[in-house]
Image 1 (cartoon, rainbow, N blue to C red):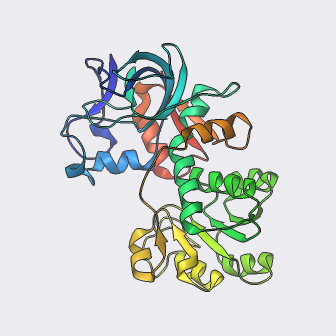
Image 2: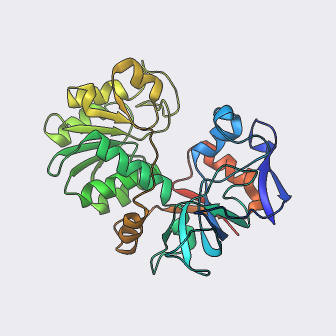
Length: 316
């Protein structure tokens, strides 16, 4: 089968499209014929080697979330049949992962009617991260939540989930997604100088809680410049009045210094709920562009720029 694979750490240039054996499903696993594979910032962190000792040895595959049709069943699997359309996280314990013609899954849910494979492959990580962040932050119905970085896929998904839970939302975002966020029901303001003052004006004072989903170390006025001294977290603490009322899904270094909450324990027991919400139109992650496997370098360049304006998806 064709698969993306790398056998050294470095930039996306180390990723190669190769012919490799198809993986065989173990107990409790299924194999799918992959139709789509979502790309994430975590992919480039893995390729850079940050989690090298915690992951399988090289060569290693690429791609953490996938959608496709069930092709083979491992021992003990029930409730799913050959040919079913499913989505979820790809297993990451072998030489290939999700960006391949065939991939293994240990957790999955059926793709609802009306949702394409590309749309389904964009869901798992953004939905899981946003749902977990709202739960860990403890935001309650009726409270006013600030989502900073709502133009990211996690941020926009958090806005959708929060509004669905009856939470009022103020969102900060750039012009690409501002209109869409307003249509969802959020009050939106831009990044840049005076962001905290604009949020306070919209809120009529303080916000109850704040979720930071901006790229790591993102500045209020210059997204991408790192460092807690210039990052957004101090402003979010000021807007809530308490670092315990702020959670970040990206700026862990600043969070440790400032006493802000973080969340890292990934779990996929709610895939069925995400499928239901996607089928009802509550959950949707915008797909900005699709690429074939052979164009991984072009896809990586846009993904790493943080200017994709939505999810990038590899299609097979």
